[in-house]
Length: 137
Image 1 (cartoon, rainbow, N blue to C red):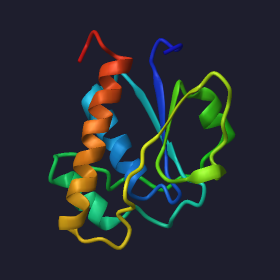
Image 2: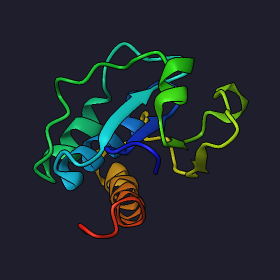
Image 3: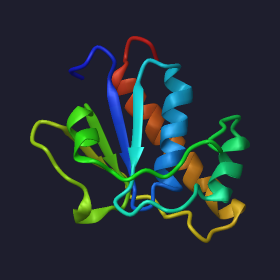
Image 4: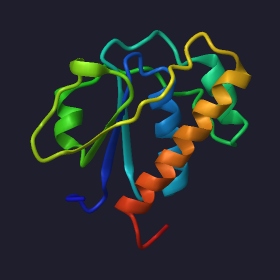
């Protein structure tokens, strides 16, 4: 990572489920050692209430989050950009670390269906965190 405090950007289409859960985990698990951004190519009106409920089970509160429009500036400022199903609509900049996490969209799913998605996101965030902050994890 190039910045003193690594910046990680999580992106999904509506910025209402997957990217918000990932951002919640990264914020909580990094204990402030990583600056976390999230955005969407077509942001929704609110965070998915089932995603909020699933994260509350983990002791992470994302109720105050609001879906945000992905900006070129966010991508430029980030050391790592993690996309989750946004396809070709996410801007790409040479020299950036990109990963595309293939995750089921939690939209329209019940809590039992969202838990495995949440748990997969947690595992991926933990692995990413171990790579970008190896001395502290």
